Amino acid sequence: MKQMHITETVLRDAQQSLIATRMPIEDFLGVLDEMDKCGYHSLECWGGATFDSCLRYLEEDPWERLRTIRAHLKHTKLQMLLRGQNILGYHHYSDDTVRRFVTASIENGMDIIRIFDALNDLRNIKTAVDACLTAGGHAQGTICYTLSPIHNLDMYVQLGKEIEAMGCQSLCIKDMAGIMSPQECFDLVSGLKQAVRLPIYVHTHATTGLGYMTYLKAAEAGADGIDCATSCMSGGTSQPATEAMVYALSQMGFDCGVNNDELKLVNDYFVPIQKKFAENGTFDPYVLQTKSDALVYQIPGGMLSNLVAQLKAQHAIDKLDEVLAETPRVRADLGYPPLVTPMSQMVGVQATVNVLLGKRYQNIGKEIKAYIHGEYGKAPGEINPELIQKVLGDQPMVSTRYAETLEPEFEKAKAELGDRAESDLDVLSYIAFPQQAAHYFEVRDLKKALIAEYTIKEVK
Ligand code: CO
Image (cartoon, rainbow, N blue to C red; front, side, top):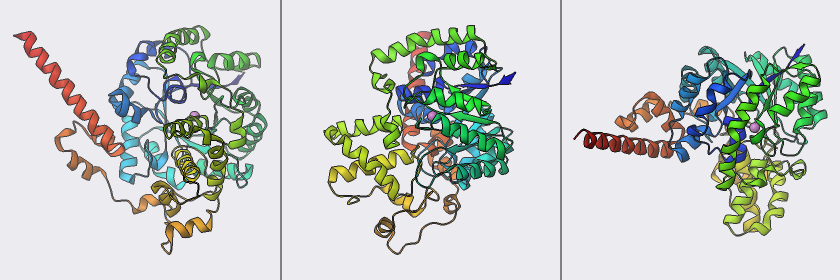
Protein backbone atom coordinates (compact mmCIF):
# COMPACT_ATOMS: atom_id res chain seq x y z
CA MET A 1 0.00 0.00 0.00
CA LYS A 2 1.22 3.49 -0.82
CA GLN A 3 1.95 5.60 2.23
CA MET A 4 0.99 9.23 2.72
CA HIS A 5 2.30 11.05 5.75
CA ILE A 6 -0.01 13.57 7.36
CA THR A 7 1.33 16.59 9.20
CA GLU A 8 -1.29 18.32 11.36
CA THR A 9 -0.86 22.12 11.43
CA VAL A 10 -3.60 23.34 13.79
CA LEU A 11 -1.13 24.47 16.44
CA ARG A 12 1.05 26.46 14.03
CA ASP A 13 0.13 27.33 10.47
CA ALA A 14 -3.64 26.86 10.71
CA GLN A 15 -3.98 29.14 13.72
CA GLN A 16 -1.37 31.52 12.28
CA SER A 17 -3.35 31.80 9.05
CA LEU A 18 -6.83 32.05 10.58
CA ILE A 19 -6.49 33.77 13.96
CA ALA A 20 -3.14 35.57 13.76
CA THR A 21 -1.50 32.99 16.07
CA ARG A 22 -3.52 34.07 19.10
CA MET A 23 -4.19 30.62 20.57
CA PRO A 24 -2.85 30.36 24.13
CA ILE A 25 -1.63 27.03 25.45
CA GLU A 26 -4.69 26.65 27.72
CA ASP A 27 -6.79 26.35 24.56
CA PHE A 28 -5.08 23.16 23.41
CA LEU A 29 -3.48 21.64 26.50
CA GLY A 30 -6.53 19.42 27.02
CA VAL A 31 -6.29 17.77 23.59
CA LEU A 32 -2.58 17.01 23.38
CA ASP A 33 -2.84 13.46 24.73
CA GLU A 34 -5.59 12.78 22.19
CA MET A 35 -3.49 14.22 19.38
CA ASP A 36 -0.73 11.80 20.27
CA LYS A 37 -3.07 8.91 19.40
CA CYS A 38 -3.97 10.20 15.92
CA GLY A 39 -1.09 8.64 14.05
CA TYR A 40 0.10 11.85 12.42
CA HIS A 41 3.53 11.68 10.84
CA SER A 42 4.21 14.92 12.71
CA LEU A 43 2.53 17.76 14.54
CA GLU A 44 3.56 21.21 13.42
CA CYS A 45 3.32 23.09 16.67
CA TRP A 46 6.08 25.67 17.04
CA GLY A 47 8.15 28.18 15.11
CA GLY A 48 6.80 30.50 12.44
CA ALA A 49 4.95 33.29 14.25
CA THR A 50 4.18 31.27 17.41
CA PHE A 51 7.36 32.37 19.20
CA ASP A 52 6.76 36.07 18.55
CA SER A 53 3.09 35.74 19.46
CA CYS A 54 3.81 33.97 22.77
CA LEU A 55 6.02 36.85 23.91
CA ARG A 56 4.13 39.73 22.29
CA TYR A 57 0.48 38.86 22.94
CA LEU A 58 0.08 35.78 25.10
CA GLU A 59 2.54 36.40 27.96
CA GLU A 60 3.78 32.88 27.54
CA ASP A 61 7.29 31.48 27.53
CA PRO A 62 7.62 29.87 24.08
CA TRP A 63 10.23 27.41 25.35
CA GLU A 64 7.96 26.25 28.12
CA ARG A 65 5.19 25.79 25.54
CA LEU A 66 7.48 23.53 23.53
CA ARG A 67 8.47 21.45 26.56
CA THR A 68 4.83 21.07 27.59
CA ILE A 69 3.79 19.88 24.13
CA ARG A 70 6.72 17.46 24.14
CA ALA A 71 5.70 16.04 27.52
CA HIS A 72 2.27 15.12 26.13
CA LEU A 73 3.30 13.97 22.65
CA LYS A 74 5.23 10.84 23.47
CA HIS A 75 4.81 9.03 20.15
CA THR A 76 4.36 11.81 17.60
CA LYS A 77 7.16 13.79 16.02
CA LEU A 78 7.08 17.50 16.69
CA GLN A 79 7.75 19.84 13.81
CA MET A 80 8.58 23.52 13.54
CA LEU A 81 9.11 26.13 10.84
CA LEU A 82 12.38 28.07 10.94
CA ARG A 83 13.27 31.03 8.71
CA GLY A 84 16.92 30.02 8.29
CA GLN A 85 19.25 32.85 9.21
CA ASN A 86 16.20 34.90 10.29
CA ILE A 87 15.42 32.16 12.89
CA LEU A 88 11.89 33.22 13.97
CA GLY A 89 12.43 36.94 13.46
CA TYR A 90 12.53 39.36 10.57
CA HIS A 91 16.22 40.07 9.96
CA HIS A 92 19.41 38.04 9.83
CA TYR A 93 20.97 36.96 13.11
CA SER A 94 24.59 35.95 13.71
CA ASP A 95 25.70 32.35 13.28
CA ASP A 96 26.16 31.81 17.02
CA THR A 97 22.53 32.81 17.60
CA VAL A 98 21.28 30.51 14.84
CA ARG A 99 23.33 27.57 16.14
CA ARG A 100 22.27 28.05 19.75
CA PHE A 101 18.64 28.57 18.79
CA VAL A 102 18.46 25.42 16.69
CA THR A 103 20.30 23.35 19.29
CA ALA A 104 18.03 24.63 22.07
CA SER A 105 14.93 23.84 19.98
CA ILE A 106 16.03 20.22 19.68
CA GLU A 107 17.12 19.98 23.31
CA ASN A 108 13.69 21.23 24.38
CA GLY A 109 11.85 18.61 22.36
CA MET A 110 11.75 19.45 18.65
CA ASP A 111 12.21 16.61 16.13
CA ILE A 112 11.81 17.99 12.61
CA ILE A 113 12.92 21.47 11.64
CA ARG A 114 11.61 22.74 8.33
CA ILE A 115 14.12 25.36 7.29
CA PHE A 116 13.57 27.93 4.55
CA ASP A 117 15.05 31.10 3.20
CA ALA A 118 12.65 33.71 1.82
CA LEU A 119 14.85 34.20 -1.25
CA ASN A 120 15.71 30.51 -1.71
CA ASP A 121 19.31 31.63 -1.13
CA LEU A 122 20.50 28.35 0.34
CA ARG A 123 23.57 29.96 1.93
CA ASN A 124 21.07 31.31 4.45
CA ILE A 125 19.87 27.91 5.62
CA LYS A 126 23.29 26.27 5.81
CA THR A 127 24.11 27.16 9.42
CA ALA A 128 20.67 26.10 10.65
CA VAL A 129 20.78 22.81 8.72
CA ASP A 130 24.23 22.05 10.04
CA ALA A 131 23.27 22.87 13.64
CA CYS A 132 20.14 20.73 13.33
CA LEU A 133 22.07 17.72 12.05
CA THR A 134 24.77 18.17 14.69
CA ALA A 135 22.16 18.23 17.46
CA GLY A 136 20.56 15.03 16.14
CA GLY A 137 17.47 16.66 14.62
CA HIS A 138 15.76 16.03 11.30
CA ALA A 139 16.56 18.87 8.88
CA GLN A 140 13.91 19.41 6.23
CA GLY A 141 15.20 21.68 3.46
CA THR A 142 12.63 23.90 1.81
CA ILE A 143 11.88 25.31 -1.61
CA CYS A 144 9.70 28.41 -1.43
CA TYR A 145 7.35 28.12 -4.38
CA THR A 146 6.50 31.20 -6.35
CA LEU A 147 5.64 32.13 -9.92
CA SER A 148 7.53 34.75 -11.87
CA PRO A 149 9.16 35.22 -15.26
CA ILE A 150 12.45 33.97 -13.78
CA HIS A 151 11.25 31.01 -11.69
CA ASN A 152 10.89 27.68 -13.49
CA LEU A 153 10.88 23.93 -12.95
CA ASP A 154 14.60 23.48 -13.67
CA MET A 155 15.48 26.11 -11.08
CA TYR A 156 13.41 24.32 -8.41
CA VAL A 157 14.82 20.91 -9.28
CA GLN A 158 18.31 22.38 -9.01
CA LEU A 159 17.43 23.73 -5.56
CA GLY A 160 16.22 20.26 -4.58
CA LYS A 161 19.55 18.74 -5.57
CA GLU A 162 21.45 21.34 -3.57
CA ILE A 163 19.24 20.71 -0.54
CA GLU A 164 19.99 17.00 -0.78
CA ALA A 165 23.72 17.70 -1.10
CA MET A 166 23.55 19.81 2.09
CA GLY A 167 22.59 16.69 4.04
CA CYS A 168 18.90 17.45 4.65
CA GLN A 169 16.86 14.30 5.35
CA SER A 170 13.73 15.48 3.55
CA LEU A 171 12.50 18.19 1.24
CA CYS A 172 9.50 20.49 1.47
CA ILE A 173 7.79 22.35 -1.35
CA LYS A 174 6.36 25.33 0.46
CA ASP A 175 3.50 27.01 -1.36
CA MET A 176 2.79 29.70 1.20
CA ALA A 177 0.27 31.52 -1.02
CA GLY A 178 -1.71 28.53 -2.24
CA ILE A 179 -0.97 29.45 -5.85
CA MET A 180 0.65 26.18 -6.97
CA SER A 181 -1.75 24.59 -9.42
CA PRO A 182 -2.42 20.83 -9.43
CA GLN A 183 -0.54 20.41 -12.71
CA GLU A 184 2.43 22.53 -11.59
CA CYS A 185 2.59 20.46 -8.42
CA PHE A 186 2.48 17.21 -10.37
CA ASP A 187 5.30 18.37 -12.64
CA LEU A 188 7.42 19.67 -9.78
CA VAL A 189 7.03 16.61 -7.55
CA SER A 190 7.70 14.33 -10.55
CA GLY A 191 10.78 16.35 -11.50
CA LEU A 192 12.13 16.28 -7.96
CA LYS A 193 11.39 12.57 -7.57
CA GLN A 194 13.63 11.90 -10.56
CA ALA A 195 16.40 14.17 -9.32
CA VAL A 196 16.60 13.50 -5.58
CA ARG A 197 16.16 10.55 -3.23
CA LEU A 198 14.73 12.58 -0.36
CA PRO A 199 11.14 12.16 0.85
CA ILE A 200 9.07 15.07 -0.48
CA TYR A 201 6.52 16.97 1.61
CA VAL A 202 4.06 19.36 0.01
CA HIS A 203 2.76 22.37 1.91
CA THR A 204 -0.05 24.50 0.53
CA HIS A 205 -2.98 26.65 1.62
CA ALA A 206 -6.61 26.50 0.55
CA THR A 207 -6.61 30.28 -0.15
CA THR A 208 -7.22 30.18 -3.90
CA GLY A 209 -9.33 27.03 -3.96
CA LEU A 210 -6.59 24.94 -5.55
CA GLY A 211 -5.22 23.31 -2.39
CA TYR A 212 -7.20 20.05 -2.28
CA MET A 213 -6.65 19.39 -5.97
CA THR A 214 -2.98 20.23 -5.65
CA TYR A 215 -2.58 17.65 -2.86
CA LEU A 216 -4.27 14.95 -4.96
CA LYS A 217 -1.87 15.60 -7.81
CA ALA A 218 1.00 15.64 -5.31
CA ALA A 219 -0.09 12.18 -4.18
CA GLU A 220 -0.36 10.99 -7.76
CA ALA A 221 3.19 12.20 -8.46
CA GLY A 222 4.54 10.28 -5.49
CA ALA A 223 4.82 12.91 -2.76
CA ASP A 224 5.51 11.39 0.66
CA GLY A 225 3.53 13.76 2.85
CA ILE A 226 1.10 16.67 2.97
CA ASP A 227 0.24 19.31 5.56
CA CYS A 228 -3.39 19.44 6.67
CA ALA A 229 -5.45 21.10 9.39
CA THR A 230 -8.21 19.60 11.51
CA SER A 231 -11.46 20.45 9.69
CA CYS A 232 -12.86 23.22 11.90
CA MET A 233 -9.56 25.08 11.52
CA SER A 234 -9.06 24.31 7.82
CA GLY A 235 -9.87 25.97 4.51
CA GLY A 236 -9.41 29.54 3.33
CA THR A 237 -5.98 30.87 4.23
CA SER A 238 -5.38 27.70 6.29
CA GLN A 239 -4.57 24.20 5.01
CA PRO A 240 -6.99 21.72 3.39
CA ALA A 241 -8.87 19.62 5.97
CA THR A 242 -7.14 16.59 7.45
CA GLU A 243 -10.27 14.41 7.53
CA ALA A 244 -11.27 15.19 3.93
CA MET A 245 -7.79 14.51 2.57
CA VAL A 246 -7.56 11.24 4.49
CA TYR A 247 -11.01 10.20 3.26
CA ALA A 248 -10.16 10.89 -0.38
CA LEU A 249 -6.66 9.43 -0.27
CA SER A 250 -7.78 6.24 1.48
CA GLN A 251 -10.18 5.50 -1.39
CA MET A 252 -7.32 6.02 -3.79
CA GLY A 253 -5.31 3.30 -2.05
CA PHE A 254 -3.15 5.38 0.29
CA ASP A 255 -2.41 4.45 3.85
CA CYS A 256 -2.27 7.72 5.81
CA GLY A 257 -1.48 5.92 9.06
CA VAL A 258 -4.11 7.83 11.02
CA ASN A 259 -6.96 6.77 13.29
CA ASN A 260 -10.22 8.34 12.06
CA ASP A 261 -11.96 8.11 15.42
CA GLU A 262 -9.14 10.01 17.07
CA LEU A 263 -9.17 12.61 14.28
CA LYS A 264 -12.83 13.21 15.05
CA LEU A 265 -12.17 13.62 18.78
CA VAL A 266 -9.48 16.17 18.04
CA ASN A 267 -11.77 18.14 15.77
CA ASP A 268 -14.64 17.97 18.28
CA TYR A 269 -12.27 19.47 20.82
CA PHE A 270 -11.36 22.42 18.59
CA VAL A 271 -14.93 23.27 17.48
CA PRO A 272 -15.75 25.37 20.59
CA ILE A 273 -12.26 26.92 20.50
CA GLN A 274 -12.86 28.03 16.91
CA LYS A 275 -16.28 29.33 17.95
CA LYS A 276 -14.76 31.39 20.75
CA PHE A 277 -12.38 33.12 18.33
CA ALA A 278 -15.21 33.69 15.85
CA GLU A 279 -17.36 35.27 18.56
CA ASN A 280 -14.65 37.59 19.86
CA GLY A 281 -13.85 38.72 16.32
CA THR A 282 -10.35 37.24 16.09
CA PHE A 283 -11.56 34.74 13.52
CA ASP A 284 -12.79 36.96 10.69
CA PRO A 285 -14.93 35.00 8.18
CA TYR A 286 -13.07 36.95 5.46
CA VAL A 287 -10.12 34.52 5.82
CA LEU A 288 -12.34 31.69 4.64
CA GLN A 289 -13.35 33.31 1.36
CA THR A 290 -11.81 31.67 -1.69
CA LYS A 291 -9.54 34.28 -3.20
CA SER A 292 -8.86 33.48 -6.81
CA ASP A 293 -7.48 37.02 -7.11
CA ALA A 294 -4.32 35.70 -5.46
CA LEU A 295 -3.70 33.84 -8.72
CA VAL A 296 -3.61 37.17 -10.51
CA TYR A 297 -1.76 39.25 -7.92
CA GLN A 298 0.36 36.44 -6.46
CA ILE A 299 -0.30 37.82 -3.01
CA PRO A 300 -0.54 35.33 -0.13
CA GLY A 301 -3.76 35.43 1.89
CA GLY A 302 -2.06 36.61 5.08
CA MET A 303 -0.40 39.43 3.19
CA LEU A 304 -3.71 40.49 1.67
CA SER A 305 -5.35 40.82 5.09
CA ASN A 306 -2.33 42.85 6.26
CA LEU A 307 -2.67 45.21 3.30
CA VAL A 308 -6.36 45.67 4.02
CA ALA A 309 -5.64 46.39 7.70
CA GLN A 310 -2.87 48.87 6.80
CA LEU A 311 -5.07 50.76 4.36
CA LYS A 312 -8.01 50.83 6.76
CA ALA A 313 -5.74 52.29 9.43
CA GLN A 314 -4.70 55.03 6.96
CA HIS A 315 -8.36 55.61 5.94
CA ALA A 316 -7.31 54.71 2.41
CA ILE A 317 -9.11 51.43 1.76
CA ASP A 318 -10.36 52.91 -1.54
CA LYS A 319 -6.74 52.61 -2.73
CA LEU A 320 -6.74 48.81 -2.36
CA ASP A 321 -6.96 48.06 -6.08
CA GLU A 322 -4.07 50.41 -6.81
CA VAL A 323 -1.97 48.80 -4.08
CA LEU A 324 -2.80 45.34 -5.40
CA ALA A 325 -1.64 46.40 -8.84
CA GLU A 326 1.49 48.08 -7.49
CA THR A 327 2.58 45.06 -5.41
CA PRO A 328 3.70 42.87 -8.37
CA ARG A 329 5.51 45.88 -9.86
CA VAL A 330 7.49 46.42 -6.66
CA ARG A 331 8.22 42.71 -6.58
CA ALA A 332 9.52 42.86 -10.17
CA ASP A 333 11.72 45.86 -9.31
CA LEU A 334 13.22 43.81 -6.48
CA GLY A 335 14.10 40.82 -8.67
CA TYR A 336 11.00 38.71 -7.94
CA PRO A 337 11.52 37.65 -4.32
CA PRO A 338 8.98 34.97 -3.22
CA LEU A 339 6.30 36.68 -1.14
CA VAL A 340 6.92 34.96 2.18
CA THR A 341 7.90 36.39 5.59
CA PRO A 342 9.68 38.79 5.78
CA MET A 343 9.64 39.69 2.06
CA SER A 344 5.83 39.70 1.83
CA GLN A 345 5.55 42.39 4.52
CA MET A 346 8.39 44.45 3.06
CA VAL A 347 7.01 44.42 -0.49
CA GLY A 348 3.47 45.11 0.76
CA VAL A 349 4.51 48.13 2.82
CA GLN A 350 6.58 49.58 -0.04
CA ALA A 351 3.72 49.15 -2.52
CA THR A 352 1.36 50.89 -0.07
CA VAL A 353 3.80 53.78 0.46
CA ASN A 354 4.30 54.14 -3.31
CA VAL A 355 0.55 54.45 -3.85
CA LEU A 356 -0.24 56.65 -0.86
CA LEU A 357 2.52 59.15 -1.63
CA GLY A 358 1.50 59.20 -5.27
CA LYS A 359 5.13 58.87 -6.33
CA ARG A 360 7.04 55.61 -6.55
CA TYR A 361 10.03 55.17 -4.23
CA GLN A 362 9.92 58.72 -2.95
CA ASN A 363 10.21 57.08 0.42
CA ILE A 364 12.02 53.75 0.63
CA GLY A 365 11.66 51.53 3.69
CA LYS A 366 14.70 50.72 5.84
CA GLU A 367 14.24 46.97 5.23
CA ILE A 368 13.97 47.41 1.47
CA LYS A 369 17.21 49.39 1.56
CA ALA A 370 18.81 46.57 3.54
CA TYR A 371 17.49 44.07 1.00
CA ILE A 372 18.96 46.01 -1.90
CA HIS A 373 22.23 46.19 0.03
CA GLY A 374 22.22 42.37 0.16
CA GLU A 375 21.43 41.95 3.85
CA TYR A 376 18.79 39.30 3.17
CA GLY A 377 20.83 37.36 0.62
CA LYS A 378 20.90 37.26 -3.13
CA ALA A 379 17.83 38.44 -5.03
CA PRO A 380 16.46 35.69 -7.27
CA GLY A 381 16.48 38.00 -10.32
CA GLU A 382 17.91 41.36 -11.23
CA ILE A 383 17.02 44.33 -9.06
CA ASN A 384 15.99 47.43 -11.01
CA PRO A 385 19.33 49.28 -11.61
CA GLU A 386 17.72 52.70 -11.03
CA LEU A 387 16.57 51.54 -7.62
CA ILE A 388 20.04 50.22 -6.79
CA GLN A 389 21.55 53.55 -7.81
CA LYS A 390 18.99 55.44 -5.73
CA VAL A 391 19.57 53.38 -2.59
CA LEU A 392 23.25 52.51 -2.74
CA GLY A 393 24.82 55.22 -4.88
CA ASP A 394 28.45 54.15 -5.14
CA GLN A 395 28.28 51.82 -2.12
CA PRO A 396 28.82 48.18 -3.16
CA MET A 397 26.32 45.40 -2.46
CA VAL A 398 27.17 42.74 0.10
CA SER A 399 28.29 39.76 -1.98
CA THR A 400 29.19 37.31 0.79
CA ARG A 401 26.64 35.53 2.96
CA TYR A 402 25.45 38.44 5.10
CA ALA A 403 25.85 36.59 8.42
CA GLU A 404 29.63 36.55 7.80
CA THR A 405 29.59 40.28 8.51
CA LEU A 406 27.72 39.94 11.83
CA GLU A 407 29.47 39.82 15.21
CA PRO A 408 28.51 37.04 17.65
CA GLU A 409 25.45 38.17 19.65
CA PHE A 410 24.93 35.77 22.54
CA GLU A 411 27.48 36.84 25.17
CA LYS A 412 26.75 40.51 24.57
CA ALA A 413 23.01 40.00 25.01
CA LYS A 414 23.59 37.87 28.11
CA ALA A 415 25.65 40.64 29.71
CA GLU A 416 23.06 43.25 28.72
CA LEU A 417 20.24 41.26 30.31
CA GLY A 418 22.08 40.46 33.53
CA ASP A 419 19.78 38.93 36.13
CA ARG A 420 16.66 39.71 34.13
CA ALA A 421 17.44 36.43 32.33
CA GLU A 422 16.70 33.27 34.25
CA SER A 423 18.34 31.01 31.68
CA ASP A 424 20.20 30.93 28.38
CA LEU A 425 16.82 30.35 26.73
CA ASP A 426 15.73 33.77 28.00
CA VAL A 427 18.81 35.22 26.34
CA LEU A 428 17.81 33.60 23.04
CA SER A 429 14.26 34.95 23.34
CA TYR A 430 15.75 38.38 24.01
CA ILE A 431 18.06 38.24 20.98
CA ALA A 432 15.15 37.18 18.79
CA PHE A 433 12.68 39.82 20.06
CA PRO A 434 14.37 42.28 22.47
CA GLN A 435 11.41 44.50 23.44
CA GLN A 436 8.83 41.73 23.52
CA ALA A 437 11.06 39.43 25.57
CA ALA A 438 12.02 42.19 28.01
CA HIS A 439 8.34 43.01 28.45
CA TYR A 440 7.54 39.33 29.02
CA PHE A 441 10.29 39.03 31.66
CA GLU A 442 8.77 42.00 33.53
CA VAL A 443 5.31 40.46 33.41
CA ARG A 444 6.74 37.17 34.61
CA ASP A 445 8.50 38.84 37.55
CA LEU A 446 5.33 40.70 38.44
CA LYS A 447 3.27 37.51 38.40
CA LYS A 448 5.84 35.81 40.62
CA ALA A 449 5.83 38.72 43.06
CA LEU A 450 2.04 38.63 43.20
CA ILE A 451 2.01 34.91 43.85
CA ALA A 452 4.66 35.30 46.57
CA GLU A 453 2.70 38.12 48.25
CA TYR A 454 -0.49 36.10 48.10
CA THR A 455 1.24 33.04 49.57
CA ILE A 456 2.63 35.11 52.50
CA LYS A 457 -0.85 36.51 53.25
CA GLU A 458 -2.32 33.04 53.11
CA VAL A 459 0.26 31.77 55.60
CA LYS A 460 -0.41 34.67 57.97
CO1 CO B 1 2.06 27.94 5.31
